[in-house]
Structures are given as C-alpha cells and as structure tokens.
Image 1 (cartoon, one colour):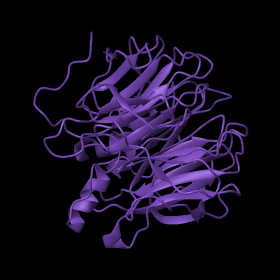
Image 2 (cartoon, rainbow, N blue to C red):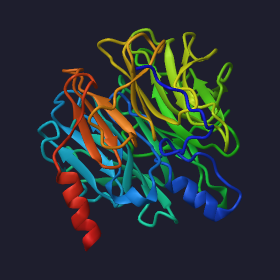
Image 3 (cartoon, rainbow, N blue to C red):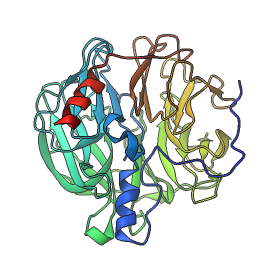
Image 4 (tube, rainbow, N blue to C red):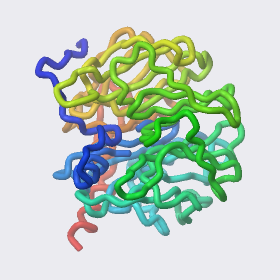
Length: 389
C-alpha cells in the first residue's frame, strides 16, 4: 500500500540525531541522548533516536562485512557492541576495550577485519557525555581509542578507494566546550584534522557520504542542510535549494551515477511536517522532495545491485521501500513487532537479505523486506544480564 502521509502534524522523533538543541544545557543533553547520533555507508553507520523506556534494547548502528556478509556488527546502548558470524542466528559481545556506545560503524572494504566505531557515552540517558572514535584491527575482538576524542561522534566514513582516509562527523555543544563538525584522518585514524571551513559556526554534523567514484567529493548532512566539498583542502558549500527541511539525518550517493543522491530529513521544528526523502540529480545543486512527507527519516539505503531500489527507515513509521528511484514508496513492516526502525543494511552478495535495527533487536528479511523475523536472541539476552547486574 502507498505510504500514508501524517495528518496530525508532528511525528514523534525517534531516529536520526539531535533533532535540535535547546537553549538550556539540560535540554541539550536530553536532545543528544534521544538522538542516535544515521546512515550507514553501504556497510554500516547509523545514528538514531530512541525512547528512554527502550534504552537498553535499542540497536543504534549496523554494519555488514562486504566480503563475508554472514558477519555483522550491531551497536547498542550500555557500551555493548554485538557481532554475528552466521547471518544473525546468534550474537555475541564484541566490545573489549570499547568504552562507550557505538552509534556509528564502518568497515574497511579491503581489509574487513579493520573497522571504526564512533561513540557517545550514554550511560546516563539524561546526561550524555562525549565519546571518541575507536578502531579495531581484529574483527571487533579488541578496540583502541584513536586521537579523536572528547567528541559527540555521529558518523564515520571510510574512503572506499584510499582506505587510510577516514572522515568523522560530530555535534558541537558549546555549553560543554565540545567541538563539532567534520574531522579527517589520512593515516588510518592515527591523527585527525578538523575540516570545518564553510560549515556553520556551531556545526552539528549528523551524516556523511562520499562519492564512490571521485572520493574528493564529500557530503555532510547537518541541522543546517547539506554541505559539499570537492577538493582535498577545499571548503564546504551549502547545497540546499529545494530542501523542505534542513534537519538532514542521512545521505546516500548512487553507486554508479554519482550525481544522483538522496537525503532523509526529520521535521524541522515542533508542529512542522516537512521531513521526508528528497532527491538530487545534479550532485546536490537542486533537490526535489520525493516521499515520506512529514516522517522523521533516519536512514536511506540504495541497493547497489539494483539502484532503482531504495529503502528508508522512519522512526515511528518503520521501513519503506521504493522500486522506482523514489517515485513511490510502500511500507514493508510485516513481522516487525514495532515501528521504531532506526538503521538498515543490505547483504551485498544476496540483496534480497536485509537487516534492520529496532529498539527490540535486529530483524532479518529474506525476501527483500516483504516479511521480517527477529534474529537470534543473544542481543536481548545479554542486555538483560547487563541491566540486572
């Protein structure tokens, strides 16, 4: 059935990143916590908001190994990262050395035992603290903090061609003296340099995307819209013509025609219904809203084998699918016990196999989203053990 548009204005924001920062420090904290600092590169990375009532069971990031797609990683609250080696049948903790919640994940496409986690400390949901970027070189068995620390990290992107180049997005919190924006490493995370020229003075970066064919072209989604840079040391330029909401949560670049990209946004303010999915066919110069109007979209994912097929997660509304490049959208929620979908990845070898993260665990579809089943109970079981201690 076609996606129904909301009739009562604001939809409760549950996915993406900070839906906005309020003047009071406490409000800033709550805003950051309820946000899961979205979008996964084709293999991981997400930021989303979850309700405090489901705080310990929420999946906040997913990453799938591009070479061995039976291996997946799932980030949750309570400083626990889970790993499966059998398509989600069983999950085990993979968090040694990881001090904070992995709200963003990315896997090196050439050496898939190397992965990065962007973290935020959400141990106290009403008083979140900054985290750091962590790195593992042994498939998530052990983690070490990089030099990019004391940040509210929201996104991680590895350059798919020059994999020693890593990009990280973060949220600025002036009241805490926390710097935000975009940081870049050219030596696999050993050192980082801030790359904020052209971004707003208090940058709140919520997502990053890299042109897979020309990796000098990088996009940043922020609470002030989409920004783009096209040279190694260039500045960012706003690319917002046609966007209904500047509260951008996720970006996805077409795998072969890279002038085509999609953005997903949240409603920009209380009572507004201008969130949804927009499309650009000219590298972000112009945007056209294409669906899910009034939804708080947390992630847009393009099927790399059939790029006319696009998936979107919208918190409180579940998972949606388009098979005509965003022209029409249909809900694909059969089997999901709740509609708090926050992140989604596609099996690169078997694209009819999908995984979606929710506040009740990871669900798997074997039929391109027509039906969903909960994966192994390891995540929920270990969460229960943690919270009962």
